[in-house]
Length: 291
Image 1: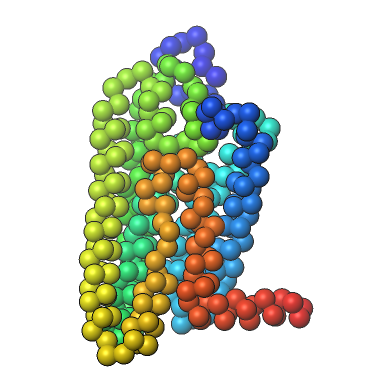
Image 2: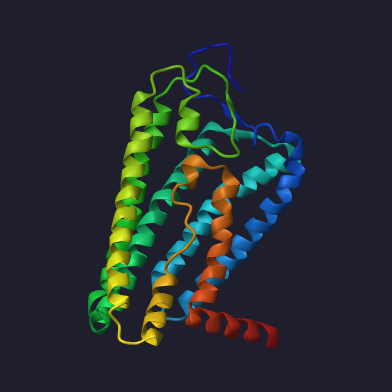
């Protein structure tokens, strides 16, 4: 807690309130949160196993599923602790760590979706050159670029928060720690935090969204030039398997439930959209059932 010194540089801990105004319903809200979390972890975990076992499936699906698990696991267990046993206390360093992983996953996910859009573009628009364009080396470089950009974008936020003196309330009216929410508790000018916190990550994401839209525009143009409806339908299924209900904007604008729900749906969407994944999951389940 804060001591008598009002210029304490690093508070000992913060208090997370959960969902303000709905405290009396926390125990009931925990039920769908828990079920969605279990579904998200198990579903995305199964998706990762399928992708890793099938060498013809690209690493981007497993990366997206892993990011879903990372974001869900970073936020939900603490939220459930708040809902169940009112364990809202979180140490300053733990709060900063949680914030770091939430925002890294936020930026990484848009980069992964861009990579998947490029993957679809190559598969549909230049299928004969697919294996020569998206070589294992290219995929590794894209993976390093995605995570390098995400970590490099968010890492300065740690120092932006640690430099601030905290002498106001230590209560955070959320279920998790996020950059601006923590910075607002400081008794100093947070203009730099506000500008960096919104402009840099959001610019990265918006650039990704623009390129994703451009990629799918080219893909749709190529699809509708195909000679038969069967070819168009097959290409659209390939394209649709890389689209998800993404929480790209959820970390900044929605509470935890809005960013957990898409991660629960992702493995279901991919299972239904991609025949190879569906068949592989069915095979895995049959093997488990026989054992």
